[in-house]
Amino acid sequence: MRGIGRRRAETAKLKSPADIEMMRPAGRLVHQVLTRMREMAKPGVTTADLNAEAERMIAQAGAQALFRGVETRQTKFPFPSALCTSVNEQVVHGIPSARVLQAGDVLSVDCGVRLNGYCGDSATSIAIGSVEPDVRRLLEVTQEALEIAIREIRPKRWWSQVASQMQAHVEGAGFSVVRQFVGHGIGREMWEEPKIPNYVDPGESRMDFMLLSGMVLAVEPMVNMGTADVEYGDSSGWPVVTRDGRYAAHFEHTIAVTDRGADVLTDER
Image 1 (cartoon, rainbow, N blue to C red):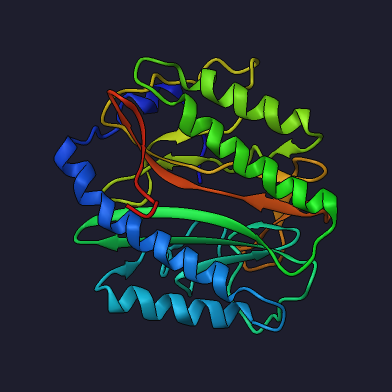
Image 2 (image 1 turned 45 degrees about the vertical axis):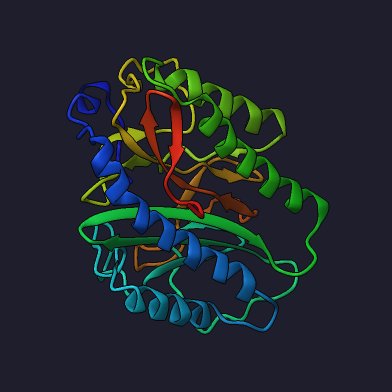
């Protein structure tokens, strides 16, 4: 999760159709893990329970968990788990623990794997039991923002044409788009160029890039109920939380740009 710049988009590693097909099994595995997480995520289950099942599925498939061992300049220790499990005000990078899920919670689960040398990365947000109507709407709007991206991605479009529609949809619903964290290119490595913002800032001239056939993008809108501002939730430097303590949601797909438009690699195919 890094800064954004037009010049860096020029270094994007374009994938061949064969490369994209090699990425699809990793995406399929991530989809299977997240489907299982949606089945398991109920009141009384811990986030550690979810991670243990994800670890089992990833190992059984002969894959590696992308997130385990990742370090950043802000963090005090390598990320310890296969999943990021972020609850309520946690936006991203929540660490699985003995925390027990309760009715009314929102759980965002982010999963990345490397399989046969290629990466897949996807996230979903799950309502635990019955949630308030505004919380349910938060999840719907965030997922719809990702669906807008899938619908609008095609070669020779500027990313800002896509991101502006995502941002307008979110803000029109009364929510806010996180700006400190963005999506990213993906391929043989989890983090590749370009960086993928979910918003447009007309005050910055280096925020944009042209979509090209062969790009593979991890598009991941992160949306807050209140302020867009976020901060680190503890001294570890891992969990990112909303500054006002209100709920957040996070959805993500790995998407290939093709001559026909968007090809979602982290689905059931």
